[in-house]
Amino acid sequence: MALSLRETLSKNYQRWLAKRIPTLDQATLNHKNIYIVPTRSGLLFVFSAGLVLIAAINYAVSLAFALAFLMASLFILSILYSFNNLNQLTLTSRSSQDVFCGEEACFRVQLSRTAKRSYESLELNFPGSTTSYVDLSITDAEEVGIIAQALKRGEFKAPLLRVLTRYPLGLCRAWSVLDLNMRCLVYPRPIPFAMNQFDSGSSGSSDSAINREGSEDFYGLRDYVPGDSLRQVAWKTVARGQGMQLKHFVD
Image 1 (cartoon, rainbow, N blue to C red):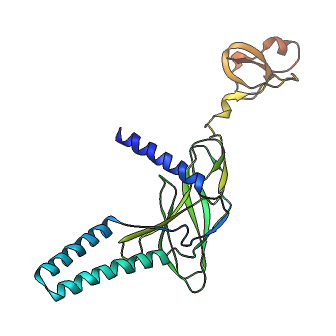
Image 2: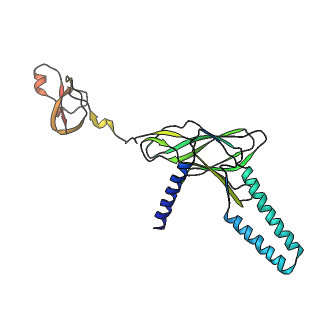
Image 3: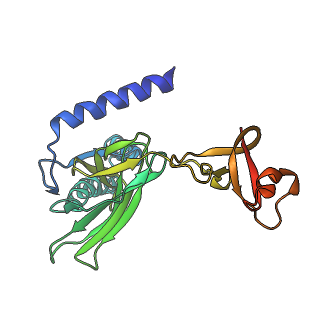
């Protein structure tokens, strides 16, 4: 019941986001589309800093005050560095290969930066899919593939893409959600099939058909091939001088 409620809330949240996020082939992250919240470790860190500050006030210990202010400064710097690790990052959609139904579709995204910036410990994923990790500190551009499960046939539009970072200390989580208008075609899934179990229509017939080899209904005659059973030879045609032919039966 709890899992079903969580899935329902997640779908409603994704639907709500899809209505408010513009569809762009290229997007640059900035203060308008970057969000920051503390992680669990960050909340514990803030709670610990508060305890240290209360102890410092209670016992009037200068070192405790210094430690509390140092912890608060580290948390504020973590917010700034987490924001800068996504700020001005440009993401561009690339062409994606078509897949069969039930396979994993790989959507290609190019990440690019200016010469004065570097980005580390970036995470890219779709809701409920595996996460792709990338650093952008040496090269100016990097192409990464994000996996999504293709469950329906036809044109498949990629879900909303989430770009996330916990750099540098893991105290804050900065992320952004984008719609890069990535699409691919999902073909019907092929079914394994042994075609050697089938044969074409009778020789001399203008109509072609696919029929299964069997022993119930007489279908026609075919030329004799060395190694065929002599029990199926049409001896009447042999007697007429029409050559060796075999009776062909189908189910």
